[in-house]
Length: 481
Ligand SMILES: *Cc1c(COP(=O)(O)O)cnc(C)c1O
Image (tube, rainbow, N blue to C red):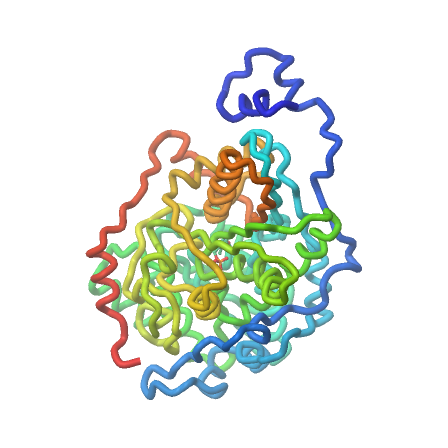
């Protein structure tokens, strides 16, 4: 197939003859497009990148004393095993057999070579994507939901609380709680609760109870509603509500789907598998791009490659892609801030837009968080990764191009990664460089089709984020930490 015939696939909605369709779709490619591991090759350990960094990330601080928080401070919220993982210096942590057993339902996940996208772009670059949309919830989130539910159940907890934005984390945790016999109560950001009925139904199908946030069930929610009765909510508010309920119930704990060290740790199975699959492909990535909300799919894919980079075995550029409407890396500050809106969590040193920041309602709900993982923020400060921000229209255009070449409809979040892949591949087209690009396609978009509908009907808009809005949000950072 020639690049020119492939280009027609995307540029046109009109194929001018049957033979051009045949030229595109029927001619055998004679190239491998999928790298699969056997079940027995699934990694049995998570990788803790902290063990290999030149310095550890700054610790979370108690909001009152500004001293580092200890395990006792966190015990009302998390089980002991997860608290231990949060501060572990160990390079590897064994995956419990009970977790491996559940991972087997969809892991190892496939690594694809995006041959048709490459041809469509006419690029000499080789593009690979690690596809996490094959999980029951359709994203990478069950990689951490399952161990979190397991450790809580093993320590006698009977109920979890959590927040969810677009609903991917809530549905992943609902699935995991169903398997380990835990009750689950979810605070779902109001905007998504109204816009995404299917995610709510998926959570309920798995047995969870779902509340719109802000709700009148918590003092944090009531405080927001008193001031803004029509509040469409934010992840920060929903976290406050879920934390408040868990902290007040001795049998309940709270679960977070991103940001924290133990969450990124659990996601490293993505990168560990990808390294084995690159060995099968006989290739090495030069550029790794991934979307970042709180940083879990990005950290999960890239940390094992960062280990290889730090050891001098490969030298990929590692690039985070965030939404222009919620740019914590590229326009936030590196400071101690609360993880939630009401200021109930420990202070985390992270790239943040301020815990009072409420992002515009872009469709990539999973990327609408005011802060960034403290671990990734630290790694960014060390200069080991870079970051770019993209407007959602460019991302949806990339998502459509991906769907029309590779067949998978990406979730709105990973369209940011796909857009960065395409940008890099088109740069290679100009320079003639045969770079190897890797990304995580961390979820499918089959429950996000209304967002694609907005794009296709021309109703999708980009949000400019004025500097005053950033400055106003940053003015609310906690003093003195
Ligand atoms: C939750 C989610 C994200 C954002 O969270 P990260 O922790 O940054 O990965 C991105 N993509 C998908 C599909 C998600 O479900």
